[in-house]
Image (cartoon, rainbow, N blue to C red):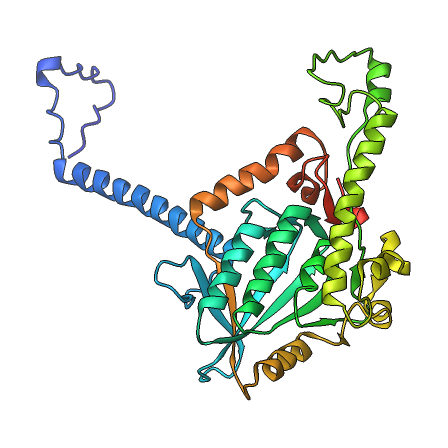
Length: 365
């Protein structure tokens, strides 16, 4: 039917409001279905985000889905098969010493807390016949290095040999730890040695003079603000710090003498050695100097661990403490805090200035 008026006819009058057609009925079912689909979509996105976060955390922490708890039901140390004979009953515990050695628990550093826990788990596990330290570290805090050194000695006291495999670096605090092992394998190109102690700090007095800033300090004693970046050290402070460094250096020389007795039977022999000036050595030079036992690779270290353990075959199991999500997030936040204040390399933020270190000089803050 054509509602268009004929030519010349008057236009149609508009409908009055009471004659408007009624609105179509609301389709409540479709509205409800749309709300449900929207809610499900939002929940799906949230779930995908959570799964993605879990995957990222698992990747950062390095825990494999097939990892099993190490010896002890309440142990937080997990183990993962990385090589060897899968069906062998005996195990070689591989423990990584990678990154700067610190006391605190960190997801990306050589934490003394985590490493000591892994070493104790390996010592307590009756299936572990030997421990292989997979090392790549420039060193770190002296107390943290000493704690790990003592834990390595505890493994040997439990009747299990320890072999250290040095990768790119096994210097300073790393070498301090390695002296407690039965055998040291280094790549000919490894950076090792650096036997010594370093204490670093900042001196910003020149910068403060340029901008016209003066620091005011109220202290109970003359040395209470020792190593303050706001002023130069006094001769008395320099003498005192040098004395502390000397004490720690003698401690280092003592552990070298204990671990390298055939070549350096006394502390004096270590102190009189050419490397006592803190120089960094290549693996080849360290072998010549008697600081390492063999030049080789990880497979050579694994074979030596089997030989010292007296077993024909074993599973290579990585022992590592599992890091919780909360620990990971807080650790990442703590690591990034200092770098947000000063544009420093990430490794430097793990050790505050003024802390005595067995550390490669180029890695010192």
